[in-house]
Structure formats: C-alpha cells, structure tokens
Length: 378
Image (cartoon, rainbow, N blue to C red; front, side, top):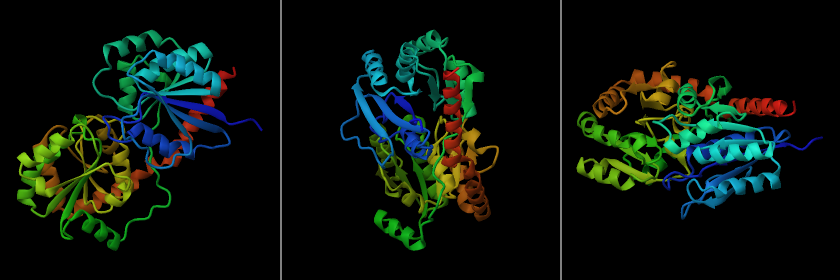
C-alpha cells in the first residue's frame, strides 16, 4: 500500500490580535482528523510568531509548528523550500496573504501542486498583495472559497479564475450531540451569577471592530427598557476588550453584561443562551454561527455578506440591517416577545445545521485533493 499523501497547510498565523485560535485553525482542528487517514496525512505550518501566552485548545490529530517569522518576511520562502524538501508534501494548501505569495513561489520552485483558500471577503487586499496576486496568477492552482460571496471576492479582488474555485462551506461537528440538562444549565447560571429567571443573550467571537459587538451594546438600553430581565454574555478576546467594557459602562449596562474572555467550554455556555446574536459587519462563513445552529439556538444576525448568504434562503435566523443598532434592538425585542417565532427559528436552525456537518465538508475536501493529485500525475 502507498503512503498517505501529505497535505501541508500553510497559514500566516494561528491567532488574530491575541484572541486565541482563529476560525481558520479551528476549522482545521475539526476537519483534518475526519479525512481518511489511509489517504491523507497533514501538517499545519504558521509563518508568524505566536503571541505570548498563546495556547492551542483541543487535541488536533495532526502536527502543528510555527516558523516564528515577522509579517511578510521573505525568509518564509526559503523556510518553506526547506520544509518541502524535508517533508515532500503532495499538496500545498495555502491560507492567508503571505502564505499565498510565498507558498505559490515555493510550489513553482519544487513542482508541488497548490490549493488556494480564502475564508473572508472584506474590503480590498493591501496594494502589495494585489500586485503579488496579479503577478502570480499565471501559476497553476486549484482554489476553495467558504461561501459564494467569498468566491466573488477571490475573482474580483484576488485575481483567481472563477471556474477554478470550488465553494465548500465551513463545518462543525454534529455527530453524537448531547444537549445539556436543566441541572447542567442551572449550574452554568450559578457559576456566572445569572438569575435563573434571566433571559440570556449571547455571542461568541473575536472582540474586533469587524464583529460589530459595539452595536449589541448600543442596542441594549432599549432592549432593557422593554425587557428588564435580559442579560448578555460575550465570549472571546481581542483588541476591543477594554473599549467594549468602557462602552458598557458609558451606556449604563455594565451590570447586565458579562465579558467571559476566551473559553474552552463554548458548547456548555451555548446551552444557557436563549438568543444568539451575530452583529458582524462582515463574515465569510461563521463557525460560531454554525455551532449555534447545531445547538438549536434562536439566532439574530446582521445581514452582512456571508451571514446573509448563510441564513436568508432558509430563514434559519432573523436578520437585522448590518451596522444598525436600532434595528438590532427592534428585532431582538421582537424575538423576546414572540414565543412562536423563537420556536420556529430554533427548529429551522437545528434542521439547517445539517448542511454544515463537518463529515460532509471533509468528503468535499477529499474530493478536491483527489482531483489535484490526479492532475499532478498527468
């Protein structure tokens, strides 16, 4: 029997703004152990230094290492060439600006097939990256986008041929779900100091401007005027942590908001959330939203690019206008007051989550790798 084909995943960094493992790495933690180990093996390489105190949650079934370089350091090319000569990967799977640039060059110089992947569609790449993407666009590659809007972004902003891009949505584990019992939910409430009668609004994500968490806080005074028993839990870390805490104080809602920081027990925390809010200004395909769907959560989401693509067709979330805190508060009050709407949204979310089953996603990635390997042998 031949040895499994080694796929070397190269990404710029493992974390964004010190917020713990970012969504791309979390996707790989879910995905890679579910691909057929008889056919594929994996290593994950980060180009950048990890921030002080960074720890990788979970136990991924693959090797992870960092090259400990600075931002867009040309030394990355030579280190990647050394890695390729040592590891002899069958495929380079590239995530991120620097990884796309240095990885494509390394693939060219070693004859290693390349898969490009984009996870986000926001604004435009830096000028230097647009130049690099244009110059390197003649090289052979396959490509993956996590949503239709990301596919369009790759074509219009990153010089990727539309017909080379396969859309594969992100996925989360759905096998063997174990909903928390009422006793377990009560225990979490006591741990967080939440009254048993309080209705909990929650969100999980990086505390970063693009996540729009200030909108949730700005909506809260109107929500509390209408529904005083509401409490908010925010899970995550990031550069806006201090600003968001100050904003909660300025708005007079600090007593109703709990900032929980980075947690490893997100499924447990999801169990106590009555309404999951996604106020992002831009998303690719949110793992946090997919996990909330799998848990059957009632979801209120902005209608930004990737989230609108995710929810609109199936009605599995109630949408509000992206960037509009007043509309957010109106829709949140509507959800809190309408038990029938909550039941309908919860059921739709749970049913719709099946299309984000990580096992289906793993099969789609395996098919991409098989096509790349077949093409490389021609």
